[in-house]
Length: 337
Picture 1 (cartoon, helix red, strand yellow):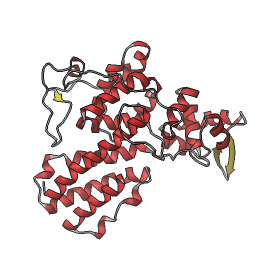
Picture 2 (cartoon, one colour):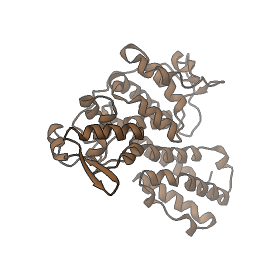
Picture 3 (tube, one colour):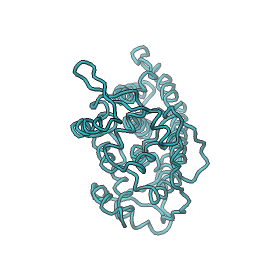
Picture 4 (cartoon, one colour):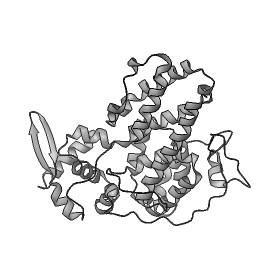
């Protein structure tokens, strides 16, 4: 791999891991990352993203497991499965192993189907990687639980330092509402309406990964309460909430954090990461590397569009041959910025 691309891969890894640490720290993971982000964290999308990116930092991976032991009951498993079916995310097999670890006690049924969703890898592979992308050697006997799912790692020792999520932390609106309203469709609808002026049922279903018909029927019922308001534009019905009333109820400022449709964004960032770690890319000359990365960005652009981050990307048609490589590097850095 040419020096600029190799250096970029290392920087990209650090940027992704710093981001993952920051998000989990805001949710209650023991860490040192600064908070204050202006958006809502999507815990299901974060877990799936961590099942891939967290394999390059065993500490953030295990701290995520530690957090799930304390807060995992607030995850929406149905939504998690919908995201996994809809988006091109690579962490499904690791997620099955994580679900198997959580399949006990009162939450056993919740995680059971996920735990059985993937067959063990044969032959087994190493769960974690070194900074340079090589498998992290396993010292001593492999952890039996992950070994049963086809992933070899050292003994699992969770520290128990994770905290309950902070309900009034701006980024934690999703978990706060679930603690108040339950893990259900009505909660996801309220979350979406609190972060938008108004919304059509199809828009809510598409961006929250819910069932369109169920959301439409639920909104009709909710509008009968006098709390969910209705506006009609021609044949379209748009629903909305009085956000200041909810801000008082939730002990928050009147302006709610920003909604980001995280799953397609994580999918695109993950595909870029996996491409940069493809050993076949390293063997190509600069021209062919530029060509491969151009194809990749064409493939992931729709995902960036659905998350509304596409305006950060340059028009690749303006940069021929090797000239596209520095443009690719610049675009990805701007995305993470």
